[in-house]
Each structure stands twice: as structure tokens, then as C-alpha cells.
Length: 444
Image (cartoon, rainbow, N blue to C red; front, side, top):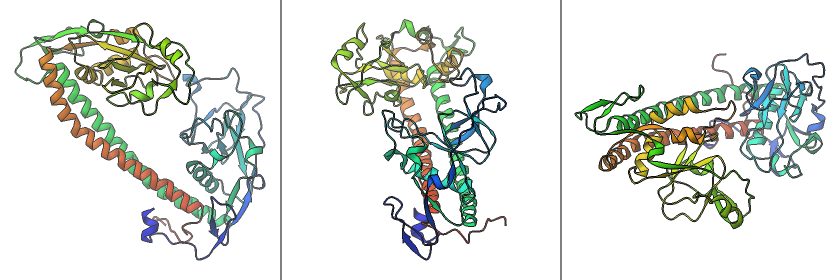
């Protein structure tokens, strides 16, 4: 962390060996104790159903769950849920093998109930819950949990977790570290939020530029006509108002569950269509047997086809470019095979325009994960210029959108750097690599 190297934060005057390889040296006045000595893991079920405030662990935060909107799968009864008190630590220690990105630690700031699939820890008197939340969060982001646990899903219960070493400074020092981190991370979070808002604005402007080009063209003097579609308005008189099914064949993926292997033939699902062109670098693999089943009925992707996400990340699309190995569609996507009257790159701009996003909003179904039916995709309404004009619009949009793409990429990189700084700062403070005992809040 640059601040450490630059001397903005001082180290403790004296350290000792922790005896734990991944913790290394700790301040000489700190202790190291096992989890079972510091927490009460007793779970109390909501047997009488008195508690109705349903909580959920989402992106490392404990949030109130809106059960009225049925967001996600809900049980028939919440009587099996466990009681949570403000200050409790919640950990989701399941699926450690397959999911190495989720934030697994949360601090409850209100009373309620939460699924018994999560581990609930109540701190004993010598621990401050805000400090130990930051410590366990640091363990999470540095992947400490992933070397523990067992079983097919590599999940952990308290029995697996009970000897995890916990760093224990003096209680007053814990509170000071928690106050310092609350203040410093809030500043970083504010900067991240500003960059996120900037990205949102840039994407809106980028889409507006695309939408104007694919509905009005590049010639402001061109004669116009009423498109007959309220939200399209007037379009160039020589353009054709139509739907996607008249200019393409839209083919849904094969609804079979293919078996995955360490090697074989790649599958393109929603993760592989997030860029402009299909990217198979993260694809899962299947066997030739499943591949032949998946490409049946004209489903073998060809150069110039578009793979379109119709579930969860609805609207993401990517062109099948030259040089890709044979692959098949996985689940949650469909294939758009264009006719000769529609250029792939022009079609991609249309699919990323406000023209389509408005239709998506009307057509999407599902409360937790949005999805769209293939028939709705076939009926996407848009306007088609002559091929020569499509080519000119593509060239113009490539130049215009590249400017926005650079700015969006710069902001995305800035966010990544700030998140790395945030993670490093938390880790340094809770493991004693920096001494914040003399830190004072600017408003004090």
C-alpha cells in the first residue's frame, strides 16, 4: 500500500512472531486466541415465529429482505430461521469450492432472523464486534477460508472453524481501529460511488449516441417519415421499419444439462457474451457427445452469428468472430443468425441501443433473475437502413463510442485501485501492520 511505503502510517514499535504462517508478526501487546474462546455460536431458532424481520447477507452487508416482493426463494415458514441480534457476525461458509468471489462476512446492525444455513457468531466480552467484523472480512478477502472446510461443496460448520486464530488487541485499541476504518473506508466508498455514478452517466450518453444513429441516421437533412411506433418517432423516409424475425433466425439454446469436463469443447453461456465478441477464455467444457446434442437443429454457431443472453444478464450480446474453435451454446442464451440485409456490427449497435432496452423493460419477467422469452426477441422492432448506410453508421459509431469506452475504462480502473487500497488498508489495520492508536477523527 503506497501510504505505508510513504510513511503516512507508522508501524508498531515492537512485534512478535504469531506462530501462524499467514499472519506472521503481530504487535507485541496483541494476543492470538482460537475462535471458540471468543464467540458464542449458539443458534436460537425462531420457533414461535414472533420475529418477522427477515435479513439477508448481500455483498458483505446484512440487509432487510423484502419478502412481500418474493425476491429469491422463500421457505414455507420462517420458524427454522435463526434469531440475529445487532452486533452478531454472520458468515456464509458454503460452496467455498465453486464461489471464490462472494463476500462472506457481514455485521448485523439490527435484530431479526436469517437462514440457519449461515453461521452466526456472538462476540464475548473481550471482543468488539465492529473490529472482529473487519478482521474476518480481511480473512475473507485474503481467501483464508478457502483453505479450510471439506466435502463436495467445501462448506464449513463451527466445528471446522473453531480453531481459526483471532487477533486480539486491547478492547480500547479494537474500538480505535474500528473507528479509524469506519472513517477511512467511508471516504474511499464515497470516491468509488462518484466513479460509479460517472460510469452510469457515460453509459447513458454512449447509449444515446447509438440510439440516435440507429434511428435517425447520420444525415440531419434526410427526409423523414412517421415510423408508426410511438417511441421511435420519425425515421429516415428510405429506412424500413420491421422486426428482428424478418431479418434473422432466432434459435434458442438446447434445453439439456450438459456434463462438464476439465477439457473438451467449450460452451458459450452468459459469461462468454459480455464483450463485443464471444470470449471463450472462461468457458466450461463438455464432451463431443453433449456437443453434438447441443448443436442439433441448426444451433452450431457460425461466424457472424450473435449469441444473446436472455436470462440474468439479459441483453448482453456478442458476435461469433473468425478464429474461434468449435463451440456450442450453453444455457440461458440464444443464437441470432442474421440475413444478408443486416450487418452483424450494425445489429450489435441496435441491440445495445435504447430502442431495444425499452422493449426489454416491457418484456422481461422474473423477480430475482430477469429473463426474456425468445418470441419477444424475435419481435424486437427497429428500423433498417440500406447496407451501405449501415456500414457508414458502424464506422461513425466506432469512432464516437471509443471515446466513451476509454473514459469508462479509466473510471473502472480507478474503482479497482480504490477497492484494492480499501482491502489493503483494512488488512493492515486489523493485523497490526500499521499503528492507529494515536489517530484522531478530523471532527473531534
